[in-house]
Length: 373
Ligand SMILES: [Fe+2]
Image 1: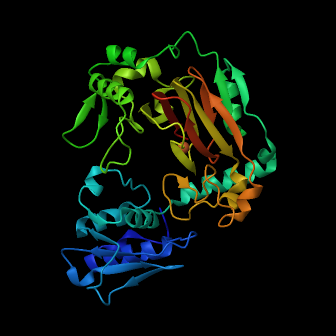
Image 2: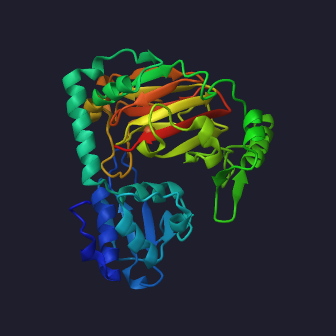
Image 3: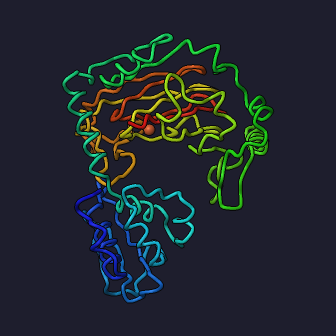
């Protein structure tokens, strides 16, 4: 629930369009002073179309509608209702949403606006506040190393979560078989498992995916081609067939939301996930290649410029990989903590820790589980 926007007030088309414009306006931030214009057209209500103009704030304008804009977005009223009712858990990658919207012109502006219209739930806000207080009380910003635990007990892990301390768990062998996985072994063992769904009709099995991945790694095509998608599962649900080998350790399956698979070809020179934090505790099992995580404690939020509009995770404006201290001067004082995960290691990252992820090797595979409670 988000008390500022009770859904009962936005049931009519006109109220939903006004509410949508209001979400964009009040969620808009522009620390880098970008200037641009986006025309939003609602085909069922053409007279309610508007132009969103970027300034220090976002201006919603309904005059001079014939002017040229940098970006044009056509969004049906049904999608506005849906966005409006779901902004607390909306995922823009959902084909049922993104597939109904047409974009032309400069897509960066549309992306920026898409971020502006999501909102967090009161529950998420409370989780982050709690993490901030705890991390401040424990002095976690002064940690210089992530602790390692070899073959811990369930109780030890519960303690770690209670104290909101990140740890790397080692010694997971021999079961499950976390080491020595290769993409060929995956292809052999789970050949028919569906690992990626790009549309309702386009599903890829592990065998097809690994073949595409190998072709790509042998002959990488240009990143800059429009519409190009790297062979990467990007957090797709872990197929049922893989649960036996990669299912959650230490706790029951029911204690986690459905696990995600991060498998594929990844850039190693830029982060695979930019700086953000999650409201749930994450377990990250590294399987193929290495990953490095740079962590910042929750009490440093005022130093790394988290976005005010977000829902299921909170991204930051500040980019540690390309720091601009003129725009984000407080980030000079932020203290990060780095940890490298090797295959067979499991990171427990308590809720609220900001993190940025680098894949150090490609192809790369991890499985992530979020602790439900
Ligand atoms: Fe995350």
